[in-house]
Amino acid sequence: MRKIGRTIRTLLGVCILTLFLFCLGLFFFVNAISDSGFVQNDKADGIVALTGGQSRIQEALKLLAVGSGKRMLITGVNPTTTTKNLKTIIPNYGALFECCVDIDKIAANTIGNAVATRKWTEDHKFQSLIIVTSSYHMPRSMVELRRALPNVELIPYPVTPSNFHIDAWWAYPGTARLVLTEYLKFIPAVARLAMTRISGSVQPISAVPASADQKSF
Picture 1 (cartoon, rainbow, N blue to C red):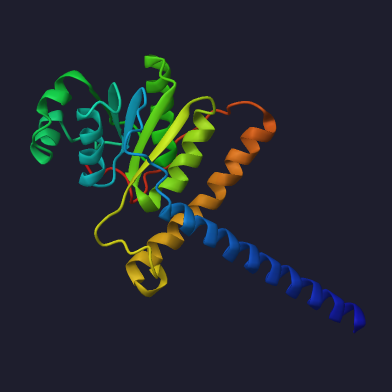
Picture 2 (picture 1 turned 135 degrees about the vertical axis):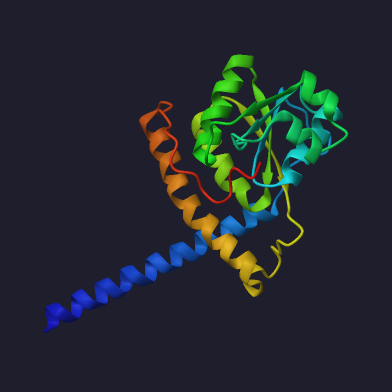
């Protein structure tokens, strides 16, 4: 009986410790969402917009228009979407599409975005990038991109959706569901990054099936 009691106490202790670490990680994850880290005068060689909402691409184009980057990649565009469609959806930037915007239609998820970004960055020999995506998606995006591009400077430019409430996020069912879903995806992304750094080399990255936050355009 004593042995059974010790086993139960050990299991209970492990469960409590796991729950504590989970909640602690969630706390830091939410803080990472809240911290934009972008300075208005920041500039980079390139700008990368991860699809998932019209505002992401629009904000990235604004940065390109004011010279925050030399060239821009939109990664994760729906294969059926044309450049003409994008010009229609996001007017006033037609000239930029003609000269300075590249479109990736292969990436189906955040890992795929990292693969496409690495190839694009290597092709153009860029050393720094401004990353544009939704605020809740930024922590995981940065982890995957750091794994793919360990020697490239990455500057986050988070875009906060109008219906996303990071303050008291637990009180809004939609925001709470989004935060928890992203956090559960963030944990294995961090594990992959840690393993890559432990191994001391950039590991091949393979795309996985499309997720709901991608292929909006």
